[in-house]
Length: 140
Image 1: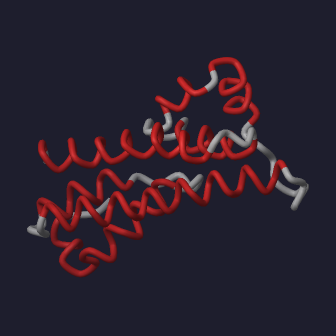
Image 2: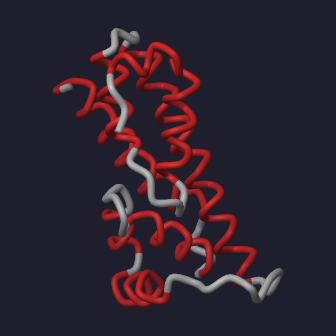
Image 3: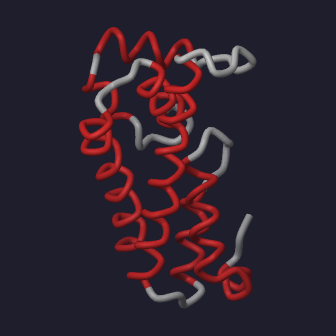
């Protein structure tokens, strides 16, 4: 998808954008971009910080979309029913899977829909995502 040479053109803005897309409900793998950025010679700390920032902002957006959908702002959106049922069944511990690609992003929308306490949501969901990027940078 992205080669290390491609990252020279996209740079840190590309890292941020890919992390944002990867953290949103749009199916996108920011992990490959982070690995390509490091392999392409971008400095690890800015890559880490911008990936974390982009992904965190997307998670906030996901939470907000769920929250506003629950408030009835728009009936056009279909809520991730499986994520909501898992969050109802397991509560906060279900958010421990929010860093996992594909299943994690609907959980963050569901948390907003269920109006989970935002500070607690952030304390559970964000560090796991940051740790994922840290791990990728360390081993990549």
